[in-house]
Image (cartoon, rainbow, N blue to C red; front, side, top):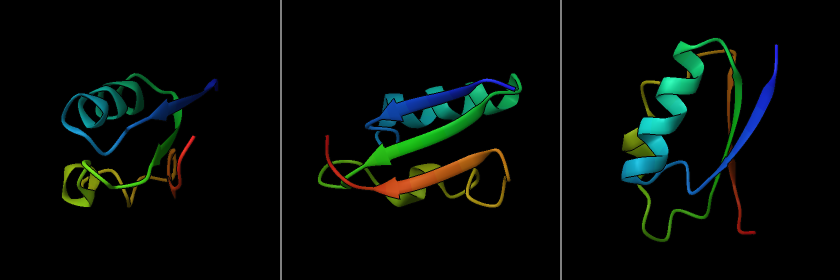
Length: 58
């Protein structure tokens, strides 16, 4: 299983990308500082063992 880092993953486009990647079998690390992203955008992914959220900034 490949791992993908998505920066800005809690934003509108980033959350859509995270959802797509998890659906296609990738392990996803979502990095977002939540300044404009929203945790609600990724709430459906949080229980998935192939999805990991990190609050931080690049």
